[in-house]
Length: 256
Image 1 (cartoon, rainbow, N blue to C red):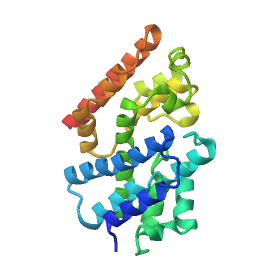
Image 2: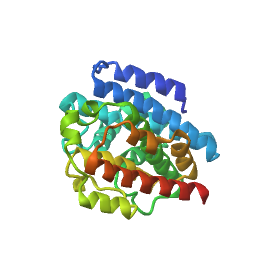
Image 3: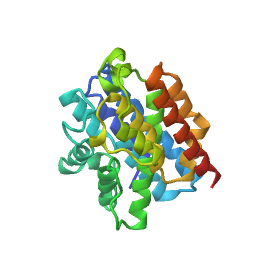
């Protein structure tokens, strides 16, 4: 049996053990709840109903549960410390927490793999259609809410550096090349925080549903996220190139 309201109550009880005044903890709490809302948007527009919709909601609720433990241990989102998806699977399944959220174990492997795969560079091949849909939904929902996060959070909260250091950087040539060729950016190919910032825009090259592109367009996230920061000179030129390339890609996908 899956009761999404009960699962949400259990999740809110779980996060009470963490310091909710910590900016990073608070960010991830709001992110989780917003990913649930984004999942609702995708399910509505892609006509996903029944158990598929309920599972998608639950996976959205639990997808970043490893982030909370990561922040408590390291006060960082840096997966070089620990892979947050792997940690989430460990907390839910190795430690048995999953039963607090869903009594029935018949969907455990779907939930486990969707969480484990949600932040991978590429989706593993050979997944059955039921699992694949859940994996693609959480990957898109997670990426879509990252655009909202980048529209409101400070440089300090996102990257743990000052604005001065951030604006002194330039986008690496390999990162601009990835943008030009419409490629998702590998974490290990990023050399600084500005590269990290650009890598979030490259999420548009790895979305799987037409409604995902419509969501970004409706919220004008590409332009708004670039406009909110005070880029100058060469860095501004880099960012204008990124913005133009991503906007053109989204327009093309929305028209197809």
